Structure formats: C-alpha cells, structure tokens
Length: 66
Image 1: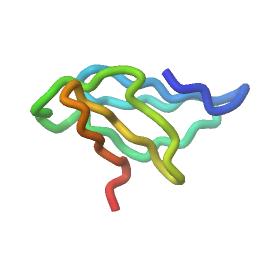
Image 2: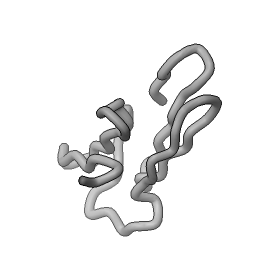
Image 3: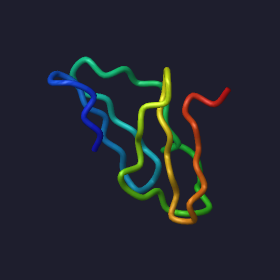
Image 4: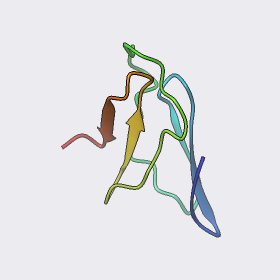
C-alpha cells in the first residue's frame, strides 16, 4: 500500500491489480493480464501521472504505459 496524502491511497495485489481509494487517481492495472512473475509489495510508487508495478523478478511495469 502506498499513502499519497491524508485522504488517498493506492493498494496493489500480487496479480498486478491496483485499487485507488479516496482522492487517489486510478490509472489502470495489470490485473487482467497474465503476468510472467507475481507482483510484489510495495508494488505501487508514484511516477508522475501513474505508478510502477514491480514483479518478483524485479522488472518494473509503468502504468499507464507510455
């Protein structure tokens, strides 16, 4: 889970799913895709207008992809 401010947070789960709560923006997730490696926590980190999901192999996926 990554706290953005006092009223918003983003939670990530091992299948690559991302959930935005409060004032946090949802930019998408990898939950509907088949991942080659399980996502690990903390899996979300703010990157401008999105976040990064890190898998158990250490490879990052930036969401939204640009």
